[in-house]
Length: 120
Image (cartoon, rainbow, N blue to C red; front, side, top):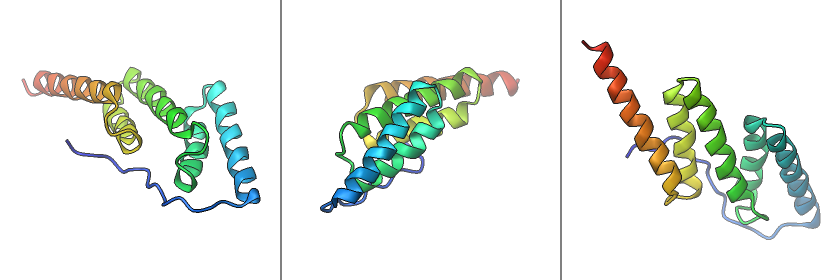
């Protein structure tokens, strides 16, 4: 299976109080964006937190959820390549995520079906 660009996790180091406060602010902004349906902005915030501290609160879980929703938006808009790209990012955070694997397989099947229709 081809993997899209991953969200590189940086090896965790001891964080200062200022670092933790900064990460908390980014995490909170991500929650706010997510709550308002702005998954792209939520992802931007949470990816930064995840790179600095992958185990910070539940950032990986929220990041996966935002990727799922953004991928679904792309899929609903028939932007299948973009949906695949986003769903593959889930696997960089959670390599065994069954939902992402199902979404990816369904989307690949849809692309194959569409290619069969257009090649006739």
